[in-house]
Length: 545
Ligand code: NOJ
Image (cartoon, rainbow, N blue to C red):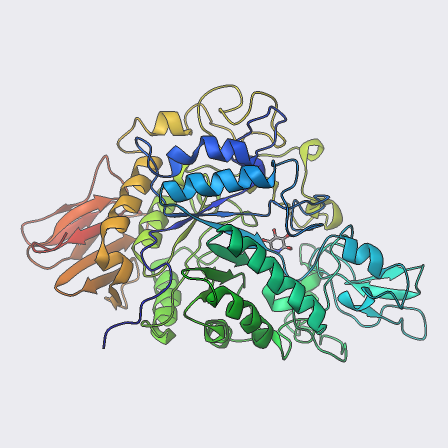
């Protein structure tokens, strides 16, 4: 049977741009849309371009920036900090002219407390916008309606003196949760999607979707029996969040959104969802894929934060590939984003290069975070420089996300070519070496590796459309798999250990690329691949690419 045509099936990768940090064009120290326009050639089409087929922007919309744009005060405009709608349209046209698709963020669970809907909603209990949000009476003793917790610290309920009720906020108190049980809210959300699709936007990353449906009776979340009250334990983990999220209507609501997506040709929606212990990953993933696999899919974030070892990575990938319906479901492997410490800082440099090879050779639609292609590290942020409120409201847990949001490093100039003035966050360091201008001159740099991999993937039907099979499933040090399409096969061999390892390959094999370009593994006359510590290679066969 021929596989049904998948949406975005030829896209080699999505590149995430955190707009505050990509390129400043107006000298205010914050990135903006005209800055991105000036860098489009880097993304695709220019000499030595990275070569990505799609970009995703974290929120660009008007916002008081309590959560740096994830607190939206107008879903259908651009924040003046980033530019104007006309700038956005110019960017869209420029991207499309280069064959780059544009994906934007969509924040359906909550708005800013300064959104006109919320301003109205809190004026009185009978305001027409009251039911746009989640309001509830206090308990008889005046305390919050239930024990639900905010991920960003403390109770998820905030008291409103004017109307004598609490409102729900899963994130900051400046981010009140919308009431998705109200059909008017769902209509609004669908209109917002139409607004952007009509303009020509190609895809949507849907934020924090698991929370849009909650228990309608506001029942307490049960205690987490595994929680230990250690000094660095996050109190949010003291409960099992079974009532406050993944409510009974979640997939139905998402389906209403994907019905809109499907009304337009070649558009997609990627759901943000992290695995957790409450629902098995398998059920979660299949639930999200079940919404509408033609146009939507969840991220797979399992490679973030798990043990860096061959058995651990082999396990999650083999299991995930094993329960997907490969003809229908598009995996979206993601190893870094604006909420997670930088890949290099989490796993190390050689290990991060291995992850680059892994991510760009797995099936589906890889999503790469800006700066990871340079091997950028976490920035070191002094308390006086902190921007993200998380370290202030959850002290001692080290959850602040500034380190992974530092300015893109374009050159060895004072502000790394990002800006002409001191940027909103300090540079991550080593920018005299770790920058696009310098690394693009080095054949063995991180950037050269990513550029090669993305170009190869763009041209490879095996990598974009081929099947997947795990090899050698009990090797403690080397994770390997094969991708196959028609008569073509590529073998990917990843040495997760800090020692040299040997790995038998079929006769006629040759190394197409190594993650350590300066000193790639050799294949002996006895067909044994001699891998360096943490080395990853793509092995071709005589008759393959
Ligand atoms: C997930 C986003 O990635 C994160 O940055 C944000 O703070 C929360 N959702 C709330 O919107």
